[in-house]
Every structure is written in C-alpha cells, then in structure tokens.
Image (cartoon, rainbow over all chains, first blue to last red; front, side):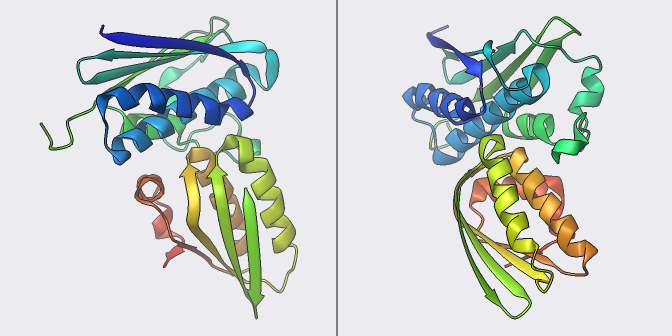
Length: 144
Length: 101
C-alpha cells in the first residue's frame, strides 16, 4: 500500500457530501479524469447513504468509518458501519430491490456501486455491521 | 437544493440547482410535490443542467414524481443531464418511461 487515509463521522445525512468529497480529494493524487472522480464520488455516496439509512438510521452517536487506500493506480475504498447488518446480501445487491419502499428509494445503490467501480465486496451479518470494499483501477489519462 | 419553477399552460418547467442525494432528497421531494399539488399541471420538465451531483437517492425522487404525473395522465421530461447523471439514468432504464430533451 502506498498511501491511505481513514476518517470516522457520525451517521448524519449531511456527512454524505463530506464523505464523497473526502474520498475524491484523496484520489486526486492519482490525477484521475473528471469521469473517474465522478464515479468514485457516486459509489462512496451510495455506500455511506446505505449505512445511514439501513444500518443505523440517523443517529449522531453511531459512527461510519471511511478508509481509502492507494496501491499503484488502484484505489480501494472501505465503508464500515457497526449497525444492524444485512441478512440476505444477494437480495440487497439485486437491482430495484429495497427493504424500505416507503422511503421512495430506487433500490439501485449496490447496482450503482457495481457499475461505477471495478469490484464491490460486501461483508455483513445480522447484528454485526457491514463493510463494503470497492476497488477501481484509475487508468492514466491517455488510457495507459 | 434550489428550485426555480415556471408554468406555461399545463406544463411546469422546473430547474434544479445543487446536489441531489439522500441528504437533499426530502426537501427536493417536498418542494416538487408542493408544485404538483396544482392539479392543472399535466406535464413537468426537470432541467438538471445545474445539478452538480446525483446518486440513486435522486433517482428515487425522480421516479416518485414520474408516478404522480403518470397517475394523472401526464408526462415527465428530463433535460440537461451531465454525463454522470445520464449514466445512472441509463442503467436504471428510466428513459423507457420518461421523455428526454
């Protein structure tokens, strides 16, 4: 690993914008394209929003950890909560599935993470929190 | 989220400016639904040219307003999407049910 950063912040929706901006600022050292930065921001926003809505609900006492690592031109992003966990990960990943239809959620969170990152892993169990690990290779501006 | 709306006949033209995420979703939804309480509104165009960020929470807000309009026989038109927002719309399949400009 060449570099990393780690932050913790309370489960408040106002921190969604902070988290995606912090991850993009960390990735800036790889001189990414605007599109690559946009993909990272969106994926981080999805993962952090899931933690806030599904793991905890808005709870200023609950903490979300965001860790970003750089290895060569690869960015690895971890979003970790210690909330309620996911009982059926396969179901949660399914496009358009939402456990909270009353909130008018699109059910596209994990599908967006998968579309915008190269790899998405979910480690979760009921009562044991959730860690989402996402990786993206930031190819050089000239595709090299 | 800033909203500017103008009505011409049965068509409402709404310009959104800011970031459309879970944090701003409720406020945005409430402002749009207040506008849609006017039952003479049949069609709505959402101008997203000044939306600087949108994730799947924003998609949920837009799909919800589409449902309200389609229940009264109206249409939703989306315009001014950035490449990043267009990518989310394309993967969601929303272009099969709304118009784009």
